[in-house]
Amino acid sequence: MEYLSVEEAKNRSGLRLVLTRGVPGPWGEAAKAIFQLHNVGYFAVEQKAGQDNPELVEWTGHRNAPIALYENEPSRVRWLEMLDLAQRLGSGASLVPEIRDDRMLMVGLINEIAGENGFGWNARLLMFHAGITAQGPEAANNPMYAEYQYEAGKIEGAKHHIEGLLHDLASRIKAQKEQGSAYLIGSQLTAADVYWAYFSNMLEPLPPEQNPIPDGLRQIWGVLASTISDYDPILIEYRDNIFADHLTLPLTF
Image (tube, rainbow, N blue to C red):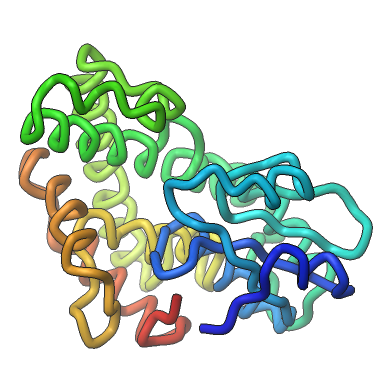
């Protein structure tokens, strides 16, 4: 995948999407897919994983990815801001349900997956904890851990949160299937399906030929499945169907 530097991106118009180079982070991969599904072109801008990225901070006010920058509008860093932008700029089928109750459900589901204290957030805490356990207590001094609010006392709560969400998602998929739907909400693809498809890689990554993730990161992501209680295979079966029917493989990053 080709990336612009921050300096190069400043001189471009249109949509610039800041992404972590070389890493299929689920927040970034889902954002890419939302814009692609809406036929919105963008320039990928490099963010360096685990680094201070001072040029990026000076330009956007943020160090992490993804960040969406459209023309001279303010930086967008939240998933809902990016979805709203894609809906405004793009074409094709909406990824947001027309029925208000369904829209409310979609926003709630994605927030449980991708929001602060959601699935991805808590999965990251479990991965941090596994690294500290393996390396020793001094590893906890990594400033990134404090930035993401890691505390050893939060680990049991993080596991409980993830297990509860996975149970609820599996139950919803089964209930929808009984109604003849292959989607989490209603009878067509929504952003909720897209977000779970990418975030599920933290639970069980797509095979290497579809997701050429570095071996080290694949092992780190493997911590989640080995830490929590058994999860229903329908979560991955459903994910694979969403990719087969709607999303692009292999992942490029």
